[in-house]
Length: 237
Image 1: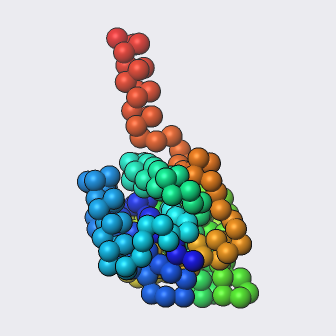
Image 2: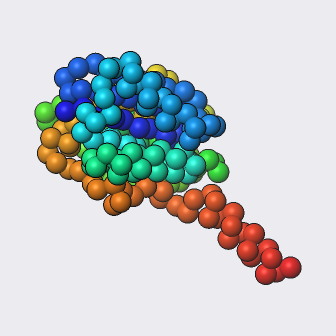
Image 3: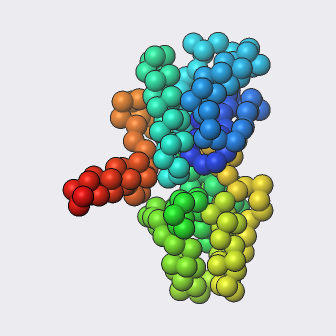
């Protein structure tokens, strides 16, 4: 089985092509600037470097968020378009699940964070489970770093924070004595982790048709909020 991986949920865009059981072909670059133009070119480069043909791709594994609105829209739209054209399914994976999976052997409660802008973070809590996995034990929510820190403090247990949101607001989180931080190397979702999650899902046929793929926004996108504000100002004027 060969999967194409697409991750555009954060400030770092990652794409990969992987045959199960073999090392993936990977490309990462800062986004979302020029994401739309770059993704198609990078996918073509991955195909050329791997010597796979587009027709050999069995599915698209895509990060569906939560994350930055523009990046998610671009990445998921490309995934849906390509999967639809090739007649293949999509494996949707959460950005927070990918971050947490990198810490799957940690005995502490893991809190995965993604910068949500506006002084907030998207986050969810996880715990290690038998068999080398990690399970989400909370809803995916958005909140201020202060609110998240207070929630962690109320747990009264040791917690590991992972993700860019944790490092961006490290000063706030460091006020909680039981907090520890994962390294900066896992600040953003890693494509190999996406593949490790996606392949078992694909083998279990946990696919989604391209037209049914949904993005995890958690809150109204900035574009929608800004539109509503402009409309309100026009009415007031």
